[in-house]
Amino acid sequence: MKTLLYILQKEFRQILRNRTILPMIVVVPLIQLLVLVYAATFELKKIEMTVVDRDLSPASRGMVTLFNGIPFFRVDGNVAHEKAGEELLLKGQTDVVLVIPAGFEKSLMREDQAQVQLLIDAIDGNTAQLIYTYCNSILFNYNKQIIANWKGLPDFNPPTEVVVTENYWFNPELDYKWFMAPGILSILVTIIGMFLSGMNLVREKEYGTIEQLNVTPVKKYQFILGKLIPFWLIALFDLALGLGIARILFDLPLTGSLPLLFGFAGVYLISALGLGLFISTITDTQQQVMFVTFFFMMLFILMGGIFTPVESMPQWAQLINHLNPISYFMRIMRMIILKGSGFSDLLEEFISLVILGVLFLSLAIWRYRKTA
Amino acid sequence: MENRQPVIKAENMVKKFGAFVANDHLNFEVYQGEIFGFLGANGAGKTTAIRILCGLSTPTSGNITVGGFDIYRETELIKKNIGYMSQKFSLYEDLTVSENIRLYGGIYGIPWRRRKEKEKELLRKLELEEARNKLIAGLPLGWKQKLAFSVAILHDPAIVFLDEPTGGVDPITRRKFWDLIYEAADRGITVFVTTHYMDEAEYCSRVSIMDAGRIEALDTPENLKKQYNARNMDEVFVKISRK
Image (tube, helix red, strand yellow):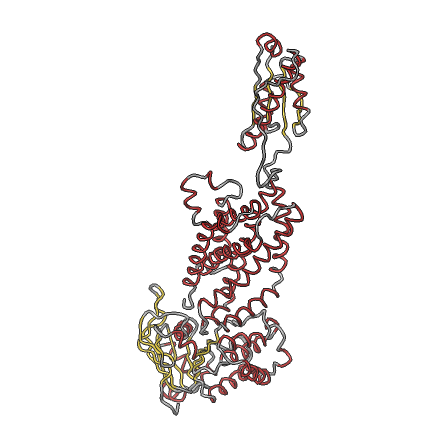
């Protein structure tokens, strides 16, 4: 026990003297939150629309005006032919082409129905879905207007209309930042913890200082804990810092209990740091640690549900995610922060994280060799 | 030497790295209180042997005891009883002199009061009192080596292993370093030292000379010089290596 204290004293001294680590601890969370949360957004702010109006009638113009009136639609010019519209779509200069065929108004008057065509750039399926939904609801409004104006009826209001009113729970304004911030924060503490601890251990190998420790009676677990505890504390500090910044900048609600959140973070970080340290016991240089850690981190982060919900991944991916500590932690963060979940709601995640933590940390201690 | 009690015993010590045999059936005994010189050219297998004896590496085969403990089963007991100074300076450069002493004193479980006394004495002896709160990174190499040696024997081990402790410093500094070695030997610490400086070989109680993984000669410097009809150890070494 005393030995561990001496080792910890040494580690903290070295960290506090390191001119790279200290700024990293403060600057990294700031930059990540400021840049990533704003940049990694799915919100549609602007839709470029091109109109191919082959009817050029009051009816067709009325439709275009309606689109024009929506703030995030930018109806950008009229082209005469579908071909020209398709060209723009191919070049990526427009998001959606609205084709109003010749005879649109006539058909509307005579037959009570007419068709328009929407060509949507669907490279990003999510965005295409959104554009389609927006356009659809605008066209629906157009229909209602026509019926009201031309048929001379008051605003079309059938007596038995079903009115759908939305109420979005846990994130009522659908603020994307609220969804992203907890995710980014979980990545942040992972990067800080995993990289710093792993790099630190392997640095002792590079400098040869580990040999001097290896000839002493220091216990393997004491050495590993000496590398774990400082960075565990630093990562928790960064979580607090990040939460503070997110609270101020995005008004991120902290619905659930903070002690619970930090308790979970503490358990999670043992598994993340354990993995980082394990990687550093099987590598010899900081470069190797970087590459291997980076590989796992990319895999874990992208599979962990930062952008796509884990539930909509294929079965095999969900199976892999059982071994992915980030996926548990990301869920925990969102559930506690946005939903206010309690311990009993997260029991399954808790047990999984404890198992992963024990597993990775034991692997690190087991694999650390005092004898080459 | 007076006490013919072996503290290190190696029988048929073999270390192979793939097809390469770094240590080829080494047999030697080191007695308590002696300064045992382990000589050989670069790549002769000195460092491999010393790393095995310190428990940093496992031998391929052979019966070896260090301080009476078995090298396979009792590595942690061995580590309590030995000190080691590696070829490459391996104290923490980003800690001060005093902080390094505190760390290793703490790890070896030296009580606080005792450590304070030892630290004071050590700093006085090395004339490092002024530099005690300076980072090691800024010290000259000669000082670093003396400090590394002093830290290696801080816990009064039975045996201290020195792997080319005086590489890269001037003859005067080397002389002073050997004064420290003699002092430690006087206190009853057995010294196992590798070197390729033949003048240093003269300072040893007994020396073994390694060549290409084998021990070619093992005796006191006096006897070796007689045996090879040489004026000094340098000639002995050259004669053995040319064989």
